[in-house]
Amino acid sequence: MGEVSVKVKKLRDGAIIPRYQSDGAAGFDFHASIDKPVTMMPGDWLDVPFGIAMEIPLGYELRIRSRSSSVFGHHVVAYHGTIDSDYRGELSVLLHNEGQTLYEINPGDRVAQGVISRVETAVFTEVEELSETERGDGGFGSTGRN
Image (tube, rainbow, N blue to C red):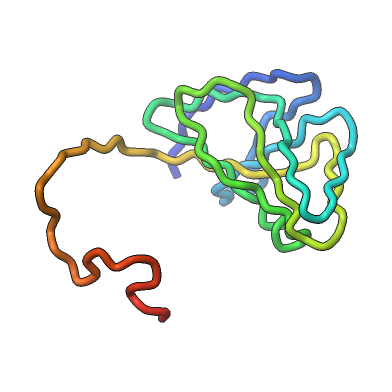
């Protein structure tokens, strides 16, 4: 498994530097950097700050994802996003309580996970025609259900 160096700056007192929870983990955890507990009602949306900024190396992106325990255990989903290598602001996650019960977030709780991924830069070329495929211009579901 390769490694890439990522600089992290704390922006708030008590902010927690992300870390992997196991040797085989693809994602590292982000923690809520809030002053007091917050309760999410069913259907609520909440932007939860992490209290940190990161310097993602050129050629990489940071993907913010849900934690499986939040989704399967509580139906709280992190709305996914890509953080580009040139962004230097505070990181946060937009959570949505899709469940039927209250969900409490405490200071320092793990609320999302991040994955660092290599990206390629596309070179776009305008053409008159594209190559033919069996699918062609068929839309969503055009290749069948199975």
